[in-house]
Structures are given as structure tokens and as C-alpha cells.
Image (cartoon, rainbow, N blue to C red):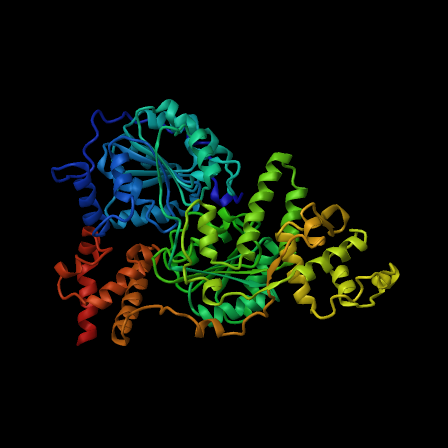
Length: 637
């Protein structure tokens, strides 16, 4: 795990003297009379600037604000943070947010400050004076929200601090980290059951964007939330287009994808190794794309600088390992690309969910090949995990391979994994350009027979040479040119055979023996296929699409702004850049693109009209309303 994401209290943390707690912390803010639902809507309107709750947000807010516990599964970009921020504002005391990412706490606090919410964080980036100031505010009841990493929270000093003040709630973000099956395991999260033991009257809300039924059950067990009300929102992100292509020089395919689909837009490219992260960033820079690397092997200061640039600047591409991105709040990431196969659907879903958080069209693209399958299986077999854990990892990888190889709607396959039935989406590659299927029973029989006759001791390349009748030195050395299967597959190219091999592995007909130099071996499931007792349909191999072909088939438009409105939008973005620079915050903290688009379309002529636009709360109206009106008037003059 990237140390930039974790927190270790400095040696002087335990030496900070405690202030006397306030006898009666003052109310957080004046609220209108009425029930919790009405008060929550008032905070949503006036503080956050949104006209109405989405989905189950209102029910979740009321559950926690009334003192109940909740376990919330909501997709990235679905508005999870409001589910604990609004109850923290409504309830007396400070809402404590357990977050695994110290790298993002500053931006989260800055965003809340822009809304007039009293927020702070405690982590190892602060000086003694800064920590002392935050501790004092906690004790005096002067904060609505306090962000803290699990490592800091579990220190005796921090727990004593919280016991000395009034706590509104505990919010456990990225709650899948408590699960050993979660892809971002953090041991400190397991200890968070102490919150229920030491603060039994304080409501707790655990939130995650990624958890299948098994992970969900473990979250509830480890956090002692078995009695909590569970809210499982739709996992669908209809604005994201899913596309998986056969890997054929992945970096060039990535370059074509970015240049033809997302030129000048912000994106994240995930790679499996640090070396590949560096090479990919350099490759993109050499071709005119502003790209930065990010991985745990880089110096702390460099990682921090790169992440800050990505959050604050427009149009940057971050190439990274999975150490980057969890909890990223940047709403205008237009694409997430994978140059290597993710280990499981949970990881893939969460990583792709970092695109299009603003609800605008976004893209999840992956280049996937046979070597990805071999590598992931080898990583599982060579891990030091026990056999039970390896079995779960194999099941999760098989589900990921099923998503890659499906001939049906990818979104349906993805949602079904999380237990959500759906219909074909019309916004993934298999819906837009349905793959051709063919009866591959004979081809698979030839492949399995070649593997068997070669003694199940050779890798993919050798088997394909035998099938295609290529008299290579190795084939001749082992006299495999004398086999009945030699040349029986001449009608197919090497790429076509690799596609058949990959799909056969995904179907469980073949396995890869990593202890025998990646030799292909038959499985029990291969017998009925080899004997002709099972018909096998496979996807027909298709060459990678040429640059621009996907753009021509794109059914949606990026924006519904007219040319005049687009000019206003671009001017507002420039104003936002300058304003964000003055405030030293990311641009989206001022206003997100979706709000600026609404302003460009509505072209309000007064503060009252501007205040009706989604995303313009009372504090932002007071801070920036007149500036925006001035920008709009200047464009009309």
C-alpha cells in the first residue's frame, strides 16, 4: 500500500496538552423549525446548492441524522459524501470521517470551507501548531467535520480526544478496506469495531462503492453493523461507456484512443507495474499528451506534486498503479484506461468509477490480451496466501475474464456480478458493435488435441506453431512436426489462435502451469469438449479498430451547448482557473463543469436567478455570484 495514502502520528502527537472541553458546544448552525427531512433538504439547498436529493440519499440522511446506523453501497459519483456530511451538520457535535487517504484530506476540507462548513483534518502532514489548533477546535465544539486516517484514529491519544468531546457521528469511508477480500486491504480498518465498543450511542455510517455480497457481509461483521440498515443503490453508471479491445501494442492503442476520443481531456491510465507506469507516461509525453506518472516507488514529494497538479489543472493524464485514485474527488475525469487486466471486478468497477463523476459522458477503456491472463494467474499461484484465499482470488479473476470475453452487454455482466439484473445498455462496445460469434467446437478440439499430443509441457507460442504447421527449430527438435495435429490449423492466423487460446482459458478448458514455464494443460472441463459432447461458441477475432472509427460511431454528443453557450462556458472555465489559483484550491472546488454549463445555458441576469442553478449554494452565491454576473455581462457588451 502506498505510504502517501497512510498516516503515522509523529512522536510529539502524544505530548499535546489537552484543553478543557466546552461544557455545552454551541449549535452548528441555525436551522428552520420542522422535521429532520425538511431540515436536511434545507441544508442541501442552502449549503450545497442542490435542489433535491438523489436516489436513497434522503432516506440515508434521515436514518443517520436520527441516530441510526447505516451501511451504504453507492457508486462512485453517486453522492456518498452528502450522506454523512448533512447528518454531521444537522446533529450536535463533530462528525468524524475515517478516510484512508491523507493525500486528499486537504482538498476535501477546502471544498467544505468554500461551502461555509467548518471542517478540518488530523494527519502527519501538519505541524505541531496546526495539530494543536485542530485539537482545540474539536474540544471546543467548533467543527462540523473532522477527517482522520485510521492509523491516527486508533492511537490512544486520538481516542481520548474524541471521548472528551461531543461526537455527532462516525463515517467510515472506503469501508471495503475492512474485508480481506477487498482489493485495498488496510489492517487498521479491522480495529474500527472499537468505535462501537467505546462510543455505543454514536451513530455510524459505513460507505463504499464496491462490495459484492461476501464483502458486504464481512463489512457488517467486522464493524459490528449487523443491525445497521443497509442501503444498496443501483451500481449502474449509465454515463460511462465500457470498451475492451484485444491488445495489440497496447501503448499505441492507448495513444490512438486518447487522441481520437479524449484529446485535451483529463484521464487516468492504470498499469500493473511501476516500470510500465513510467514508460507509458514518457511515451504519451513524447506524443504531445500532458501525462504524469504516479506509483509508490516515487519520492513522497514528487507523488504529492503530481497528484496536486492532476487535481488542480485541466487536461492532465495520470498514468498510475492502483495506489492512485481511491477517493479522488475530481469530477471531470473523462476516461479511465487499463493497459493491464485488473485482478477482479470490484477493483475494475471502482477504478472505472473515477471517470464521469459529474454525470457527463465518460469512457472506460481496456486493452486485454492472453499475457494478461497468464500473468494474473501466475500472481495468484505464486502468492503466499492460503489455499482458501487463492480459491476466492481465482473465482474473482474468472469473473473478470468473463466480463472481458462476454459477447453480451458488458454492463449487464458487470451489474449481474453485484446482484443487479438489467437490460442491454446500448452504451458499451458489445451493444454498439456486437461481436461476431462462430461455432468454434472444431477449432477448440484441434487446440486441446495439440496441447495433449505435445505432452502438456509447452506454452502458447509453441502450440500455435504446431497448429499452423510452422517448422521452427523447437518444433523440429521435439519432432512435433510428426504429430497428427501439425498444420491442422493453417487456416487461422497467429492472432486468431491466440484469441481462441485466451477464450479457452477463460472458459476453464485450459489452465496455465506456471511452474512448468507457462505450459498449457487440459482441465477436467476439456474432456466433453474434446470428445465432441459440447458445442463451443467463441467471439471471432477482430483486428483493433483504426483511429477515429469509434468517434464516428459515437451516438452521444459531449455537450448540448450551442456555439454561443460553449463560448460562455469556456470563458467561465477561465474565470474558474484564475479564481482557484487565487484560493489555492482545485478548480472543481469553486464550481464543477456541470454547474458552469447550466450557467452558460441559463445566462442568469441577477443573483436570484443564479441562486436557482444546481451547485450554487448560499455561500458560493455570496462569494462568487457578482463575479459570475460580471463575466456574463462582459460577454454581452
